[in-house]
Figure 1 (tube, helix red, strand yellow):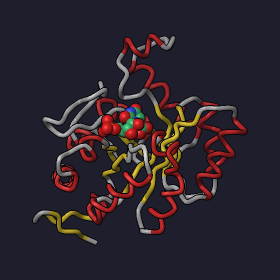
Figure 2 (cartoon, helix red, strand yellow):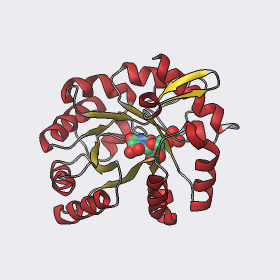
Figure 3 (cartoon, rainbow, N blue to C red):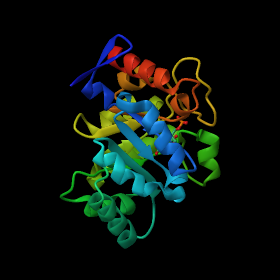
Figure 4 (tube, helix red, strand yellow):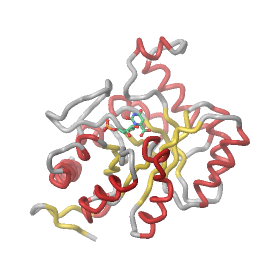
Length: 240
Ligand SMILES: O=C(O)c1cc(=O)[nH]c(=O)n1[C@@H]1O[C@H](COP(=O)(O)O)[C@@H](O)[C@H]1O
C-alpha cells in the first residue's frame, strides 16, 4: 500500500523503516502522540520510561490497530530469566525485543524467541557512548572494536540482528551479511538538536550505511509539528 504524505507518495516498506520512540511518562501522552501521528507512522518503540509507566499493555492496542511494536527493555540477566522474558514478549506479539549484546544473554533470548516472529536485537554499544564513556565501564577496546566483537557474537548467537549507531552500520552490515537486521538509533535530521547522543548520522546516511530501520524519538516527538517531522524523515528515507 502506498500512502501519500504531503505530496510525496511513501511506500509501505519505507514507512516501516521509521520506528518512533514513544518516550513518555504516561500512557495518555503516548496515546495522544499515536493519535496525532495517525497513518503516517506504522512502527513504534516502547522503552523503559513508558514501560514503567504502564505502557506495555498499550502494545496490545497498537498491535490490534495494525501497528508494529518494538519492546526496548535491553534485557541482561541470568539465562533462565532472559529466555522466559523473551518468550513472554514473543507471546504478547511484539515485533522486536532488545537485549544487551552479551553472548549468554543473546543465546538465551534466541532460545526464548525460537519459533516466533519476534526479532531479538543485541544492543552493541549505546549511541550515547564515546570511547571514553566505554573505557569508564571497564571495557578494554574502543567503541569500534567492541561493536565489531559484539556484532559477530550476535551473529553467532543466532539472534535476528543488532542495534548500533548509524556510524557503525556499514561495518556491522559487513559482519552480519544481508539477511540480518541492522537497526540504528542516534539518528538526527540535519539541524535537529543532538541532545545526549554522541554517535549520530542523518536518516539518509543511516540507510546508505546499511541500516534496515532507524529509531527516532525527540526529533519527532519534541518537534513543534510531529507529523511534519515524521513526514520529512520518511521522504528523506524514500529518497535515500
Ligand atoms: O535500543 C535503543 O533503542 C537505543 C539504543 C542506543 O544505543 N541508543 C538509543 O538512543 N536507543 C533508544 O533510541 C531512542 C532515541 O531517542 P532520541 O535520541 O530521542 O531520538 C531512545 O528511546 C533510546 O532509548
